[in-house]
Length: 468
Ligand code: MN
Ligand code: MN
Image (cartoon, rainbow, N blue to C red; front, side):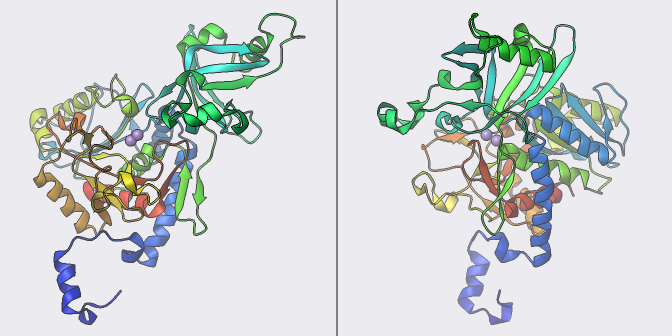
């Protein structure tokens, strides 16, 4: 980079007046680059141990407890200076610390989600046909169905038995574990399938997990392959077919997080959306030494299916928690909410030169150009979005620029090409200033997504600046 004295009048005027996204590699010194690479290691370990929202909650609690946070239930006593976590049914997590400042000055909230698109087992999933047994699935979230065939899949989740015990199940993550698989057509017989639009080439009812092929006895009896699968599940986990009805079992990609590219600056993994915001939001809080401000980090469930239900961001538990904090510190909860600020932390689409037709390049998030702020999301003319106020966007810019965070402004794609939403509007509905911010992702919602370690670190720096 040139010194200020070496720059021409033109260059100086451009620098003063023109908005340019800057690459992390252009603006970062060696120490920052090293810190980004180091930070990615912790994130990749979090990814491998957190493939479902339940597992992410367990991982989040471990990190929080290591940082001195203690369990809290609504109604428990809270004190200024305290560090707590509220585990909501094992599916969403509220990690928070109460500062010594009046909470009426507002709470800083970061909110990311820890559910990800996947294939949930149906309540009566198991059947056999033509020498194979299968588990029927009902897909969860916005997937492109064709991407989930012919890849290694693992099964994660819980089976709740009628006696109250809950069996935790993970099959397919250890080297020696068996895997699951969804059959696809051979190209030799795929002429008709190939001629169909991509979106209808594979139907939801064809997403059946191959789960066995040998009979319980000699195969002369009815459905012995299915029976054999049930026998193995019963021996290993102690449940029977009826127990699938009260289970949450999900097929997820069996891939581990790995470096992508020879220079090792990208990460390939399942579920970057939205663990790539959840992990930085959480670790920035856990590493914060500010004792004055009250901060809440939310790791939400159900974002991929609309944030409904009691573990989604539309649940009023966030308001209940703020009420409890206000009550404990003799503050007016309405005043607290009115003065609170939230970064709704969710991924955005990285501009992809392989598909330039869906992006508007001036307003697209560029890979390695930092965490991406989004004033609005939505579709069909900003439908269904929290459109953050200009004043609040300016305030957040101030936080980022004040801490020299590499950031960029972006929206999802070209107008009317598609669209999407985040939890931002559900938090803003509580009278809380909220804006979207997140990491650009390549191949979002694919079984294996890609992000830049540079952007992951920028996200961490952004959340740290926000709660500083
Ligand atoms: Mn997301
Ligand atoms: Mn998503």
